[in-house]
Length: 447
Image 1: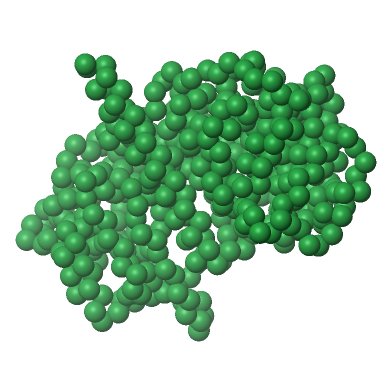
Image 2 (image 1 turned 90 degrees about the horizontal axis):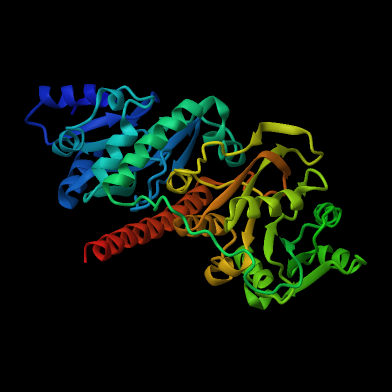
């Protein structure tokens, strides 16, 4: 079988028409040299035919000098809609499905920055099986040696602005096709609802951050406001001296919630502890235990934005720094891909909302965070954006420190896959919920 290097959807269609008797077409998605196992084609075709798959891909190996590294791939879920989903270097496509999915492709789509691959594979997934073989059937040269923490912000790099704008248009059209768009009239809450001990609470979940926790707490306590606030630190059974440092802080505004290891809490569970406590303010504002606000007016800016936009969630922007606050790539992360009209839709395509995040407590108490330590904030952002308005602050208000203690600084491929799989699961649930809501609202309007 001929191996075709993907360039554009138009060129791919031409190849199919030249070989009308072929059921499958083998397509390479990058320029890496591929060495196929002897049974590669047989196995791929067998699985594709037996499962009636539209797209078939498999795990592979990466060669780094004399070292051979295994590179497993994730199963494709309904919510695997981010444009950087890892199919590996090569896919087997059902030729008839390619033609059907691309029949109405515009010239613009075929000449897209990625040649239309993203649009094609989204359309090929509608009502079809996408099969992932957990078998290592080929080997490629390893070309990207960056650590996981260096890769995770590629999608917000300003150099990729045009590419990201196009991917957003493609994804929005896909959502429209499957009836997954959120309503254009998000709910605006009554921000005077309920009684609270303070206007704002800074929430800091922490576990074993003895070298950074005082910086974070002092950053929060140094805020200058005309409203009352407190700082709720949820210590998740630290055993490195973090809890002792917190116990020695003499400030009535500091609320220390001590979690026992038997409670088995992740970061999301710690957030719920703070939200459901009697100390929580009207607005709950995030601060990670190794990060700091960039000036004394951050809380004021965030609370003002809640009232200016009458929203349930406010998301700021941050500067990526090293431990000593020297700026490191990518520098400012402001998520300017967000728009008031389409941000809630595009959020399903990208891997995060930004930081710091702040919430209107009454609404978030009804939702709560999943008890996990990765993706808990993304889950909350998706759920809120399904129904409620989200406000943005595009100037940096936060220093996000990248150092050896970061939990996502240098993950293995298995750990990266687990994280991506979980977020794909969150997207799957959210997509289904949005589609169901749209169908129900449509049925109600027709009755």
